Length: 140
Image 1 (tube, rainbow, N blue to C red):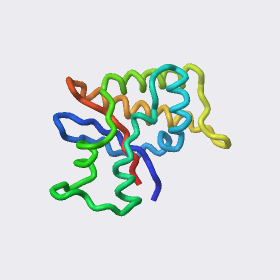
Image 2: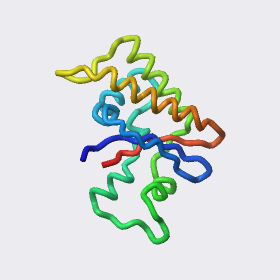
Image 3: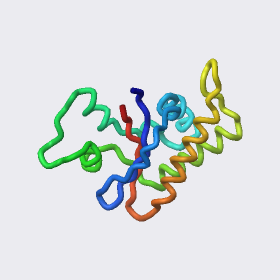
Image 4: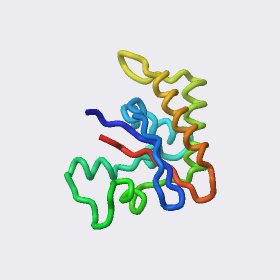
């Protein structure tokens, strides 16, 4: 079992998930955070919510009446306005492509990072609307 990121949006109080595993984005989250800050796009880390991870690692019980960590994340999770998240993803993608940024010491996972950022952005753009929020949940 590995740790990955999943793309989520919060719309009308409900979490919608594009639950394909984003392993490369998780693996290179620190580098993506460094790049996003350097490019004045905000913090990539600010997009990452650890609600699911904390519940799994600490073997916690959900509060009475909640059926999933998604419900907990909807209530108390870390969220960013969707437009802000899309701007960051677009900026990162443009920079990474243009500068052919390398990800990995032995094997360059540039293609994987670009593909996962594209998938995340495509999903985010598919649910554009007022008040919609975005995050990556850390899933184990």
